[in-house]
Image (tube, rainbow, N blue to C red; front, side):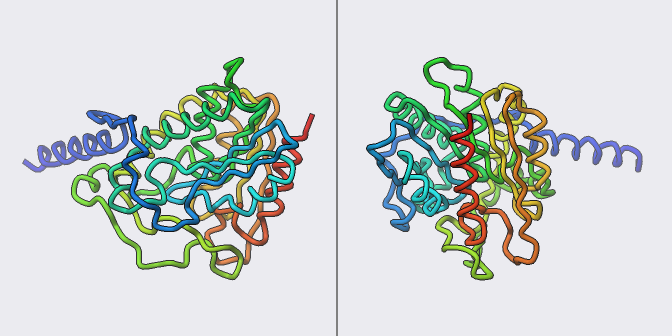
Length: 298
């Protein structure tokens, strides 16, 4: 009898892990309607565009999960001295928790594609930079459009980006999402403690449904990294507590770009999560300079 219980338990665990870590019986919508979005909970979460009439080039800066365009505000303003700069807001982000809980990776990515295609035809050259989840979306854009003669971006910059996450809870997040859709956080310290950053504008807490959706999008992006062939700059902090630092080497080793660079930040001594490099007082100007140098690289 005991051996049957062990076999049954083992099969149940295998099935549970299979369901939680694959798209098995899973689907989500990609269609979205900006007109249905509620008012933003903070005006700083709005999309930003800095026009530079002296430049024919555009830099698109993609924010993270579950953040907002404000993550790029300081770096974007600096880059706008030489280039046109767009900081789009992904669908559902910055609105309300209730509305965000009804959105999915496919909609976030589709909203980015639509913005990218709208602006791509207006400018001679476009560089896409992404922070964290936005970095993963940047890789996805390069996979899908990097080989297009008309639609390819010139370069990509990927900062603190995940293509895998080593969090044990993620192995069960799909099952958790069947019962819990929102896990609020009472913390508001975010990444700006130690007086090393600006206020962070985004949703605190966890969203199991959206996390699982993100993981499925990440899974596809990871499988297709070899399709990235355009010049790429990767930046990451060795002590990142949000996205494992090993992601940078994995991305670097699996993309096919002939021109690719890695820049490692050491933020030892700070108590923050060492993740939002575009926001910290100690790093945002250096991030700006590295992006500028990379764009101007021959």
